[in-house]
Image (cartoon, rainbow, N blue to C red; front, side):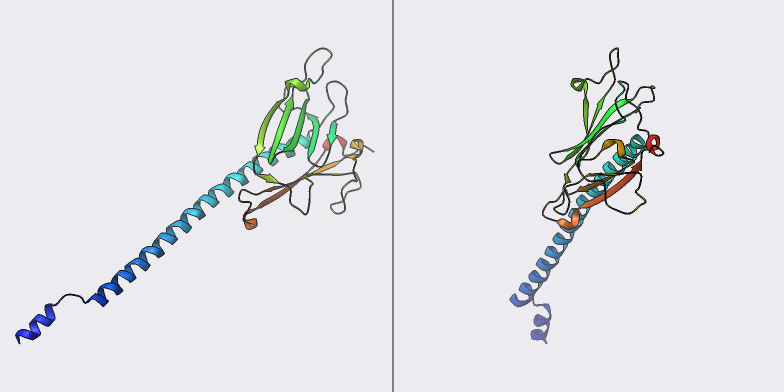
Length: 207
């Protein structure tokens, strides 16, 4: 009877201890990896939301500006320059009755905006006074395309190729913008691509 009581009160064997430690280590490792995955997901989600917010804000402003393109204060044509990675035009961005010179362009991974207010008599646009701001970050030019801006003439009906380069700016009626963001170059799946198109109202019915 005494022997049986001692056996019942005896501690864990070495093998049992090793098994318990192994199980505990496995659980700890699993919890750690899960926490890291959740953390990475949260970081990536935050980045994606921030990137999408930049795109939405920029596109919203850009669409409104392109639709409202009008004559320059110095008599220049409504569109200043149209290239694959830059586009300049004239529009009244602050409602003061004067058309400002706006320039959107791609520069070293950043989509930027330049603004020149008309000044002087007669009115002109001094490049030195241009204010430049960053609108969308981590922009890339995918291997399949090196074009951010594409231009279409009056014959465009929703399908078809853009105008051939060099573009005749007097024939532009619609502008399309394609932006791809890649904050994690090693992970192609993390890329965000967005596009927009805007019709120039003041040129819509011009032949």
